[in-house]
Each structure stands twice: as C-alpha cells, then as structure tokens.
Image 1 (cartoon, rainbow, N blue to C red):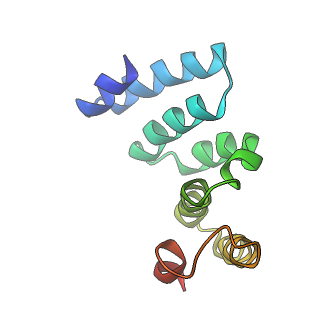
Image 2: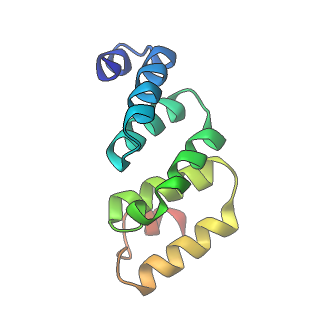
Image 3: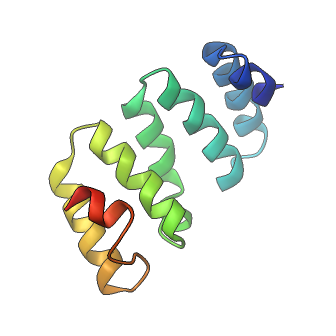
Length: 104
C-alpha cells in the first residue's frame, strides 16, 4: 500500500498508489495522502493543485489551514500565505501561535 511505501521512503511508488486511490475516490482524506507523497518528492505545484480542489475542506480546521499554508510557502506564494493567515485568524480558525507564530 501507499502508506507502507511512504514508510519505506519509496515516495514515487507511494504517489502512484495514492493517485490511483484518489482517482477511484476523490476525497479530502485521499487528497491528503497524495499531497504527502508529492511534498516528499518536492512536487509542490502539483500538491497545491490537488489541495485547491479541496480548499473548503482544508479551511475547516487548523491542521488543514497549516498544511495549505505550508504548500503555498513551498511554492513561493508568500502574499497568498499572508492572506490565508489573516483570514484564518480573523475567523478564529487559527490561533496566534503554532504556524501563525512561525510565519509572522
């Protein structure tokens, strides 16, 4: 499975497995798995593309906001990260600590 391949650091094979899984069921959970393999491979633009397909899900929880923000950072989209953090803090979905503290 993809998780075993990730643990064995076979990220390319894991990505293939997760992409197959995602194509069978394009869920947020499967998107997170696919993104984890893409990040490990340095495929930030591709990871961001899939994350944007599930943006509403990412913005529902602190962990999702942080993951999406990290992808934006890795892709060099600093202004977008600033807007994401400001909106999340304003909506009280992100507390002034953790990722917020790291990025500001």
